[in-house]
Length: 295
Ligand SMILES: [Zn+2]
Image (cartoon, rainbow, N blue to C red; front, side, top):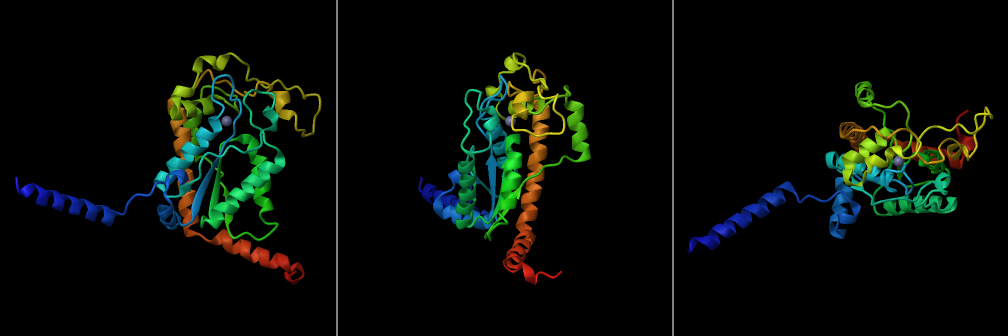
């Protein structure tokens, strides 16, 4: 059949044309992008990079050590699929001193956490990703991350660092409450278990959830008006806060998708806005000569 090659050629040409026309899709996962495509990814993302942070720690008796990593990564990749941005690989260097007594905890020293995060941000910036959004999945990181963000003002930076702060709409919050079956929570609880049942159901040992107590043991109740580093251990020595015997895939899906949607909105706005950069630069300039700042 003589006509085959020409039909094939025409088909291939059309394919190539349509690919060129639509643009070849670049993956959003940093570790999946080739070096030549990385240059295009920086442009396509407007320099926005998501840094999903988790930790390796016990999550009750029923969830995997990397639960927070799975959660933050799922939220980040779902958001990046909606609004293109580059998603940094698994990052598990965080604050977890309070679970050093539990098997599997990887608790690096405080100065290493600091250096690792600072140098990771510096390296992303050196590679053109100048708008970094931290997507945190681990509650024990929150105070560290807020202080880390504030510390960026100490010396001029050529990038902006944003800490994603999700807040459900009233409507979503009501729906979450209506799906919830328990009143307590905080760690490896109904919400986290539901999220993991949505993200990686094969890793959830539902039957194990009731084998340890996730109740607040209030072992420092005799001391009011104080904060001490041992507070978490005093309350939740099993590194489990809440009751995960009840959970649902529907709740997990809602929690993940609601956060991912909010993150996608932030990415979109951050691409369009240079407000943080402008304010930072003005601040650095003013800080060099505080006596010139108008009083
Ligand atoms: Zn967690």
